[in-house]
Image (cartoon, rainbow, N blue to C red):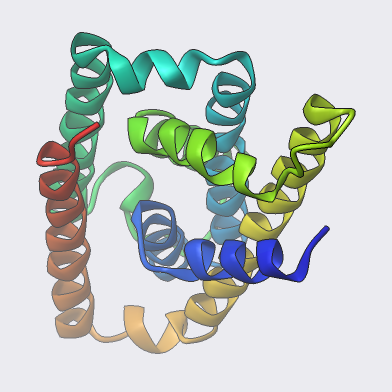
Length: 203
């Protein structure tokens, strides 16, 4: 495991994106338990993209305009739906003083869907992982699994840290209706902006 891979991965993971935004939203609206569930769901959503890159399916997304567009617009629609939910304070972004097991499952599923519907992740893995695999590597698949596993572990750890930091100030936030209203609008705008960014994404 090279230092350059770890540092590059950390920069990519820590950069604000749909997963980070969703984990922060879950932490602020539902608490630390929900932030762990959100981080787990987002990390789980990486698995299909990792498998796609290993099997070469990501190359299909890269070359097929129809396949890429289909997955992309599903992702855009879901992000806009998340934006609407944030504004309405509904679904997994509803404010709750107590986190129930069933609601944690919903948080995980939502985090999973957010990542699985982003076609850029598959292409990212297709372009990113090979850079850190030596040309003379005898066990390419095993190496890709090792790097992918490290990337996922780092994703989970960073997202949980984001979530815990947000959850630490949750009580102060939910006790102020004006602040909550501002946050809901901010999260709604964030999801909408990420949806727009994905809509204009090229292969």
